Image (cartoon, rainbow, N blue to C red; front, top):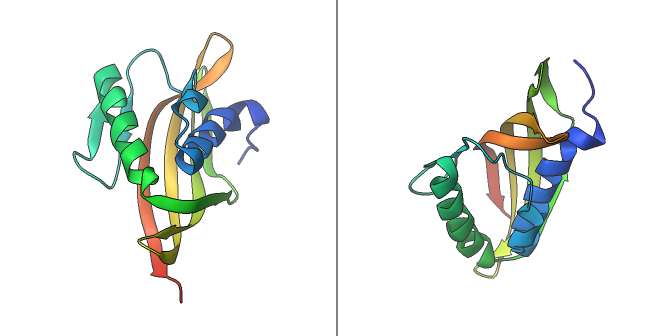
Length: 137
């Protein structure tokens, strides 16, 4: 397992900050200019290509707009693999926030594939999976 550098974490960090703030400008340059595929836990679940990315941005902004005080914590990256200008890793992520007046705690994982474009790592694809969710008292 190789440690991810800050350059490989820049796009996932921008993605997480977008989810926390709803500021779509944070995503500028975070995703590949080529093919993009996103797997999410809300319909239509598969977002493919640049048009899918645009649809995902709009739907995700609505989704996180209904959540207050959303904050993330990344855990140690897992399953690192680097092949040329492509990198894969999984990133366990804990989310805490308030939805419908109820605090929640969610643990999930992103599996990322990033490609190197213009000397920068950009998200080519990611899939999100919730592995634990609880409403807090």
